[in-house]
Image (cartoon, rainbow over all chains, first blue to last red; front, side, top):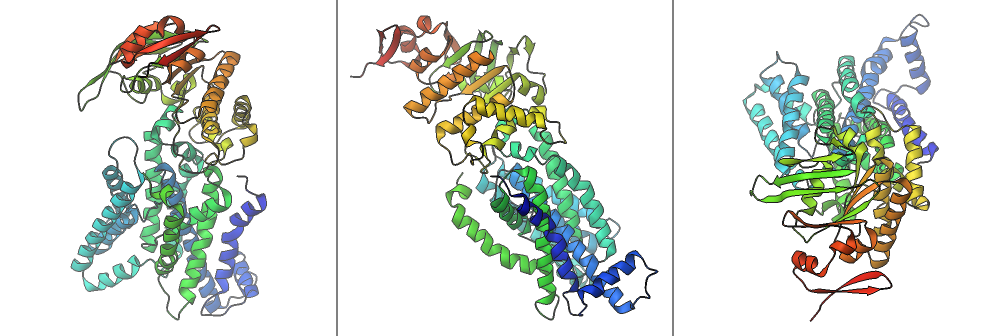
Length: 335
Length: 257
């Protein structure tokens, strides 16, 4: 299937458009022109004297929030694509495989009891433990089949969710509130420090995935065939899994658990642009960013409260998964 | 040239010897067929040659060099494997599926080059499925899909081609079309082929050499007319056949009571 260049470009530009609209939608009304001048002023501060309220809202609150949502969207959708490719299973994503839950446990542990350890490192350690557990439980002999992988993901997810509950139960009430709120998945704490952390984390983890993305095609043909075609499957899998887990862990450490994005975005992009990972990976990055920015804009404007965005993605994600199950039928669940 | 020398293979659990001293060679430019009943060790032998499993004893050499110590990339440039028809994970286009065969020529952190695209196009034209190039390879017939897998192996540019039951799941017409195509390409490019088949008639029609194996041993090898005999077929499959000659073509007919 050949993608029309116009569609390709439209998807790649979508996060910029979504981000632009997201900047002037909010409780405090600021016109688009005003935002433009505020951003200009930030870039070239000598032009006008600043209005501190509007300046603070746009530059210190909305802009980092939009950027953070975009970056987390990129991380979750790219890892969704990667896991679907290497496990040749269109129904997995970091959330279903239990990585999000593992990373969340690492974060909760760090917030609750081990503040001296960096939260991202704890998230990564437990995230990677979760994925390897899910993988080795599902792997019986040779090829890994679809249903067992999803089931073992469910098991691992349940286990780490229980571990998080233990932390919540034992931690002191002040910290408890933090953990509970953060687990729901939200960008309300976004600031420039978070943007920097995620930016650096993604730069490290997504470069290898991006460069090796075409190999996902070959690996998705199955371990034996990929090997026979000359792929060092074990090595490549380790690179893909570690890089993806790092990306997810960094995302979870700043925004909590946001599910379903890694499942929905790659599917939608595959429907539009076909399954070739060479284009699927960059398009999913753009699509993921745009989707997450939109979801977060809805989350903070739907009611007078700032709803956790994880609720919005779950509300859209659950029906989507049911739709895939019904549509795919034997094709997705067989074997 | 493929040389298989005294291969022994056994599984760890349950411990059973599958291959017990298999030796044969396939000369450059020849098409050889492995014949053997289910469970005779054909598939195991194939997996050892492709490098998916490791034999405990013996050596497999391709053009004179032992293939065991080779990296997956180097091995893939020496021998290309056409698997039995598989269930595709995603509906890749025929072109993208064939392009995958180039992976041993693409370095780890890059995507296929212009050269890889040219080779892919050529492989697709060679097997004669140019008109299917942009179609999803999940939505073509079984015979066409087998040709896609053969094109993918050709794109690999290896001198040795291994085909694991290329006629499985194909109807009468497609069996002949696929094997004819393979023979034509092999002659034209001077490739060496080793394949497994179930039908001794097809083996007689399409091979220069036949290697018969049963219970992990080679029981006969040589030119088809010398090897595919009543006695050997009886020994291998345990059924009685009669062989009829018609205009120089020999046909095997099982005796049905």
